[in-house]
Image (cartoon, rainbow, N blue to C red; front, side):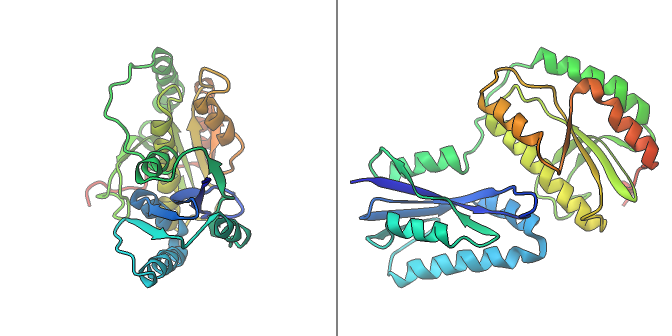
Length: 284
């Protein structure tokens, strides 16, 4: 019996084209599993802003459907003979602008709770293992270049080496460190990321940067403005690796401007040209 799965994604901004995978369904025509990732749902809601009610309604509708089948459920729903590959394909054909279902994909595994969890952790959400990763010497050199060409040049003018917390931004649900950020009409900010580390860590840093930028834009009413958010990263090792493919994808996004460390002075010049300055009062 063939097993198929479909990924449920949220598209916060159709023009940008980015998506966030929030859940997954898997079926073999006899058993059906579905699960959502709470962390991804919180991120999606923060990016949807006033449209977050669409996600609430969608999840509520799924829960009501499961309950109508008289199935006991909590974070994981299982329904027998309720939804098959044909139905998953039907959902894919009727995607709306915000909620998307991927085309059902075949997987050569038996549809069990263990195989479902393994695939869910691989594709949707997995707790990052607490492992010690050897410091990348090349990244250390990049940080030194960034400090010399950018931080030393703008220190005192804008916030440098700042750590955002919920104390600074009440809607922020994670802590995040930025190399620098200033405001004057528009934001000019930079975040350096080491792409020679685990894919999960990179994805978390990039996703949190995206979320932080949106929270700042909404709080200071700069959403839709030509803000300057820079991601400073040298090209990662290993062409064809997941890390390198992710780096290549970011080169084509409009949200960030990706720069190598050697060009960190471009951020400093933008800060000077826009007369960006500090905007957070740490006394409050």
